[in-house]
Length: 338
Ligand code: TXA
Ligand code: MG
Image (cartoon, rainbow, N blue to C red; front, side):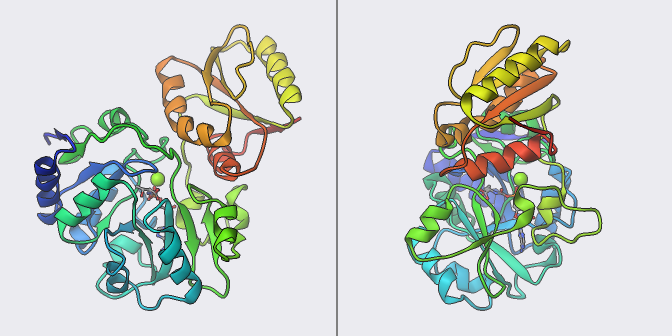
């Protein structure tokens, strides 16, 4: 299949909207990561998403909207705490899980009776959803298992020949996916930390608990609340090892490991430490910058032929929990505490 590369001009976005309306697949920028969109009201279109990504069909998709009124069109009931999140944090990097209406096909929700809904802040995403005339189902636009795409190039590398069009909207500003909050139980539960932090939620009076599977692997006999939790994620070809602790101890440990390492090694470094015999990529100097650079750096290490990546991780504040969650998943639980 030929994949069109489109700009963010209105006429090109309208062309992309028409493709979605006609049952096709379009990758588009959001503030978090690029999404791979199709009509959320068509089972056939949703099935094409799973095929293009190589995604297991039991892992549901997020339904993207461009007007708050659309939420009532796809969900049964909106609890008060969810209403606060809708009022105060949308549009933005947050996804809410609510009971679904029958109009949303099982292919989109992987047979669950709930649906994930997100209103992205990115203007191109909003214009595309509006042009499509329907809610847009979209997972991240990477091949299943790979790091999520934060630049158009990442989408072009993964999806050329597999989808109808890619809108080039430049780099994503947040860099990690939306915070997913489940509102179907007695208390709101964070299933994935992301662009909205726990402090952001506290500030609007929403007390959410954190699902335990955010920082640990799902055991073989367990059914996680968020099906995506049980799959391999964000994995570059290189082996990833997280070194976690206080800055000086982390740097010392990485130096020690580099001395013993025979393979081509990389370091994802927060504070610009001097490491010998390693490809060093900067993770910035805050967790917010780390979030923005993480997925792109993992892809770049692969391009540079790096076989093992030592990733510094120091603090869990702010965006730290989201960064830590992605690092732990990328490392498959391979974490050294110092
Ligand atoms: O920032 C984002 O959320 C990006 C952009 C494109 O919007 N999208 C994204 O989608 O990250 P995806 O498919 O890569 O991740 C969605 C996650 C999966 O882990 C899936 O299992 C979970 O959301 N999910 C979707 N619907 C769910 C539901 N009804 N109940 C529980 N988890 C759900
Ligand atoms: Mg994804």
